[in-house]
Amino acid sequence: MLKPRHTLLIAIAAGLAACGETSSLQVADGTGPNPKLPEPNPTLIPTLNIAPAIGWPEGAKPLAASGTQVSAFAENLDHPRWLYVLPNGDVLVAETNAPPKPDDSRGIRGWVAGKVMGRAGATVPSANRITLLRDADHDGVAETRSVFLENLNSPFGMTLVGNDLYVADTDKLLRFPYQSGDARISAGATKVVDLPSGTLNHHWTKNVIASKDGSKLYVTVGSNSNVGENGLDKEEGRAAIWEVDRASGQHRLFATGLRNPNGLAWEPVSGALWTAVNERDEIGSDLVPDYITSVKDGAFYGWPFSYYGQHVDVRVKPQDPALVAKAIAPDYAVGPHTASLGLAFATGSKLPAPFTKGAFIGQHGSWNRKPHSGYKVLFVPFSGGKPQGQPIDLLSGFLDADKNAMGRPVGVVIDQQGALLVADDVGNKIWRVSAAKKP
Image (tube, rainbow, N blue to C red; front, side, top):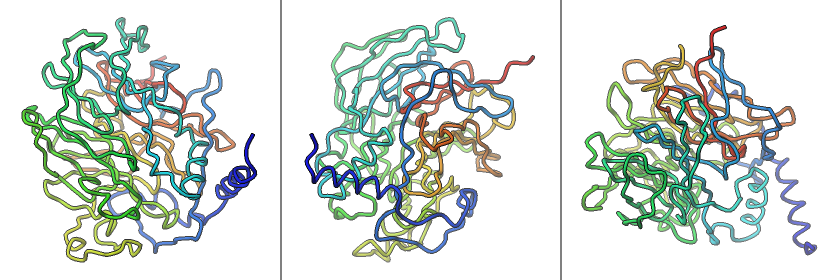
């Protein structure tokens, strides 16, 4: 039975979910190479607008764009968040969630935030495993699955170099031996490098991608706070993309000032590394747009001192004017508070036009905006290695008429047959988007 204090706090949490300001701009205004950036609008009580997680009703599925169709590639998973396609076509899915991080939920604000985020389906225990899905007959449905790796620690990113499979746990980068066709890895892990974690581990997801020659690994490490409110000493090595030497495990900070980078992908024309980044919260429904950007070696992207280049965030104390003067603006905004996580270029895609050249983005969906934003898979057209034109919804319909979340997209990847796979961590499914069959 709940104590009176806890009952009161739950009532407060429910009340807070209805509080805060409302957007004065459209999501489209915060999208593109030159998004509108209104004046900050902080409020005493941050805007909390959760879409409660309910899962998909029987027979329901997202809405696919014209010329495409969507079906379930795999179902009944346990919070699937990230995907990787092996060279033989097998699909790895990280069934994972946040690790214990007791110092991230201290005080009434932390307690209330935890309860509210629980409504969004973000607090289920982590399965801590990677599952292999196999579609041997290539009919678009995984007919077999096996536990590929288990007893991990909030795993997320995966990448294969030769016969070495790398997995980014929340606290370390691991290497496992792999042979083509393996349905399970029983060998123990070799640690490549420790990653920032601990009992305060605000953005826990770590992704990894290999360089084209396989000599380097690039690892995303999100910030340990919204805007440094836990102290800048807690941000050592964070809000950055690491470059790790695959042979020695030595690392350096490749790019910094990236609040919470997740998706990583190589743009096929320019060869540049791109990332999808979640920007900061609590200065209004219209700020700050999440973005995708090319990642320049040695560049600083502003966090926490400034956003979208050199727009100073006055909440951060002390400021660093010299560092702000070096901050560069990202390439392309994808809407405020959309929680853009997944990133995959259309290389190998067999989807029809206009989804042939560009980037697919898994948008997990907002909590700090009224009305909601995200909750879709977005496509950004590219030309000459750069974004070109307005984004297009590829997969939508994740919210029902009452604004409940039936699903939430996360990782996206092109499968061996040229379809797009989408991890849905609320629906516990992997969706597959392919070209619509001709009548």
